[in-house]
Length: 386
Image (cartoon, helix red, strand yellow):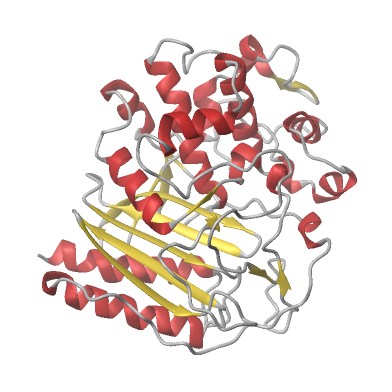
């Protein structure tokens, strides 16, 4: 889920988070009132005890939405977060990329059994990497064994720009984590390669394919992949604050709102809103985006290692079993100054998307995943009990 590297510290000004700022939810339907009240309390706790700048959540129950927020969008002005806030979604980008790949499979333009070597001759080669032994399915479910380029922060920092080719070259300078198909390891390189394959198969930029196939048809007006090295977030947005993933509560806070996300691209470079993500996952989980065969492929999971607790991974999506026993489906993403979770019921009828505009937690959780798990538990415990 992580795409962070040390490179993103360049050129940021310091900022200090502020506590307080009580939750400001919209009125909730009576049937979900208890769950929403529990979510509201957790929002306040995350900001006041966790020391986060601001947090938002949007809950979707069928055709009804509830929005809540605590803390601030901007620690300088004190502005509150809003439903229109756009934010960097990190690895949730992978779900969009996998969806495009699977649409192309459904159209007969490529196959999950196609090898990387077939589409990108000579690209996956060196230090025992063999593109002829890695197929597209292995890229999408992280069983390829290809080295994760974001684990080599020094190499990333040596590049002035980050075209996909340079990201893959970093990975190829290291041996694979395991032989293809023999294990599981989260690798952002897998999705950079998938993005390049999409462009090779369609003759169009990945950003265009995502817009034309997903964002436009499903009304995701705030969802896009930035072009080139554009560092800005277009439209209304919160500031993004980072401690560069340092765990020391006293670590300095930097403003990472403007960020060249080309170093993450297909692996984690997209921008969206909570409402858009709920709409997208509701349609995806509900079977309204992919044909049945590709839907089955996407939600066929493999076990994970050293990742989100109690999770399994499909093709760009994951399942997480909550403490209450309910299993939810979706994806999470972490990028400098932005940490997001979008998970819901398998039929897509109930969704929860939450984002914090900081990448730390001082409230007893190891990281914001603990907060997100508590929020999902508050929402879906009631579903399981009824």
